[in-house]
Image (cartoon, rainbow, N blue to C red; front, side, top):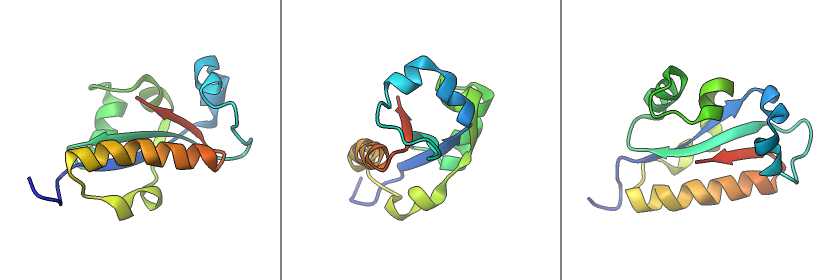
Length: 108
């Protein structure tokens, strides 16, 4: 596959209730109250389809399934589509940058 692949990074807004999950909050010691909590992932599918699979419990992340509200395309659309390797790297970089901005972030 060439430089432009068919993989995508995506960001799911999580319900503020995820803050009551001790494991989530331990992973986000610098969370700024009032900032969004999000799940950052990568997929070979369209992000809308991947979100639906999370919500349906298909290869789902627990937080995305239980607390996922909606996709936040403004945070990821500019990066897509990507090769597998680029999506894998961008998933990590995007999570780091959102965490540095005070977001609560979960990544698989």
